[in-house]
Image 1 (spheres, rainbow, N blue to C red):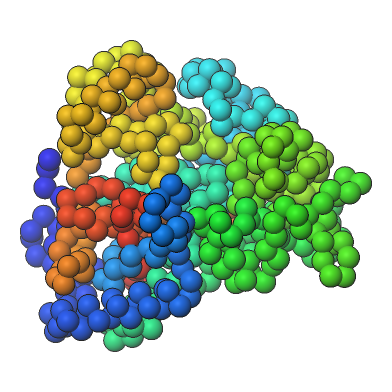
Image 2 (image 1 turned 90 degrees about the vertical axis):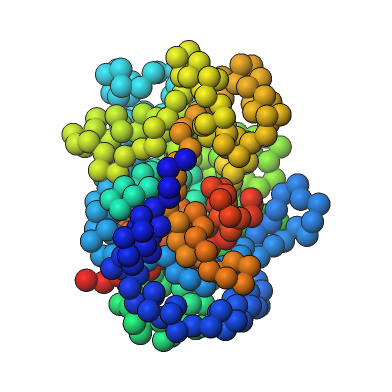
Length: 471
């Protein structure tokens, strides 16, 4: 594989400008003191209760996500380019969703195979003709970016359903400011702590248009056993809104109501962290205990806004991902500012043959997989694992895409009592309502195992604070 771009040192040409202050600071630090700070950070996270659940694990069900105390730094100029590309992308994704649930012009134009959309499990026919406020389907989007060079950023994945991780972005920043005020004084870092306020403004801006009062907003969680429950509780608390479960909500006379100690209270905007299948047992999975019977009819009638809308999964389906550059150009009239990773849809015979011929070189992913599960990283896989995936591809090729193994950028990381390069990605969080609000930074995930390209927390990855510098 090609040598990785190091975000501090480039390809070996000396310390890059955004990292000069950090490099100078590191030069006067003792590794033992940094390790002690890392221990303090872990204690802070444990005290705060920042954990995630590991499904199917025989170990403890709740774990801390490892936190690295060395920040990832992005210059103001780099961030401006990313902002333009991310805003272009999220606008196009919402335009795509509006189109496929209305006139389907992009399908008529032959830009995407029709069956790839209408026969897709993430496409909800029940959403056809529904007009959400401001025409927005995905109000909260996480765009997963990777870097392969000085000026080379690529979009690895779009998260248009219920993206998670923003609470870690906020807690990472608070922890860093507590532990390293001297390092902050050497850098002019743009703040991210206004995210809850920005989220609340976004939710208010997409309330039903016929309200004659301030909208009542609630956050729907599946409950304490969900892997992201800490985040649900954290965000509800930060915004000053109610955190509710299905038993707290009821539909009466075509209105969604929340049970309170003062009686029923109408809910106007529901920020749901429950998957589509479980949202309304009368429309989707009849066995669901996590949803609210009748809520979909209330939504279709325009009496409540669901954030993100049902059916948004079609825009982040991995089979659709390969067509996103065409989608962007179709709706914006311009080429994508941030390109995709080259992708092979194994449903296509030529792509399948290419993938089977080069399995040891490629990354193969399930179309509906997430969290680092259901994937093959060819260069690090065993012969047995490769052969298992070969049979899976032959049996159900439409269920997989393949991509080249990228040389993800690295960043200095505190591991095993020393500082070494580790691969990482970045998930900026975008809010779309009355305007597009993009937090300067996002969640940096880092692969803590040497040489590993899998950054997901469920697969042993950690997180870093992400600093976007001011001009």
